[in-house]
Length: 433
Image (tube, rainbow, N blue to C red; front, side, top):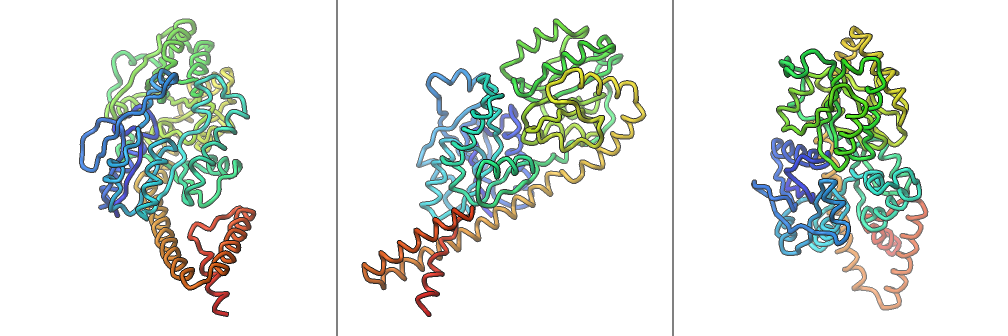
């Protein structure tokens, strides 16, 4: 199978969606598929098609602070990349994905889409994350301008699937985990000298408002174990200065801000004592999965829009959203109950096996196959319709289109769609009678 990914950023490990795209591409290639990538990132490799970067007037500084990039559509490059593809998979809902979808349609190539960006990832950056109306507006905008074009949509968790359905997204929505690389596993490592006598708490993720690293700092800072605890925040992002200032105010031991390549990150995870995922909004949290795959026990926010809470195996693995005192209580419990933590570590290692990336990629391949077969049927029906209409008088053609319009309207009322243009089969069957 020839699969083209349309992903603004690729090869840069600054956000979870990019990492997911890279790992999916690697696993698909290992399984014998050809993977091409349309991106604005300057990366080398077979099947990489580089587009110019799209710079947004006025708002580009916000985009840069979030460590993001947008690709600018170039019809010639896009056409070259997707020509001969079996399916084109859109990992974002932006300008280049819209352009690629239109070109794939002209070329009769199947398309699928992924929903990885929660509206809160955007609204928190402009201090509107707690306004439901703002988030709903983004869901609606994305649906009308992009996702309505696709009958096969991948999202990384059941929570996200439920939210899409709630916001009137239609078609086939698949909750498939982004999966964890086989490289993440428990291993014996020597703890860095600077952590030797400390209880090390880790969180991995962008430094941004919705991730709520501030809660971890306050929880540790007000804990009776403050002097004993070392907090490590692995990531990049716009709130780093604020977090450093907060850490200086609350913590006995300065926050260790770091950003590491995969091998070093795996070693870091295996050298820590506890993982905290404090985010208010999360579509899945691959970083938390990587941590507990290595046996590092997590404490997770129970936020309604944080899918990561699905990974809590006990009540001790959950704290109340936005409540640093609740988080402090959970941290102190684990410090005081090392035997329970050790037992949970083994349980998490076993639990993590179901999220192996190979199984997740196999499920995504099934989605691609369904989209390809549906696309073949749609274009076969289009050819059938063309032949059928050629035999009709103008009045009969008008009656056909009127019936088709009513059929499509009825499909929408049933919250379905005629993605194969199957009305022609109803018409020809009726005519045969």
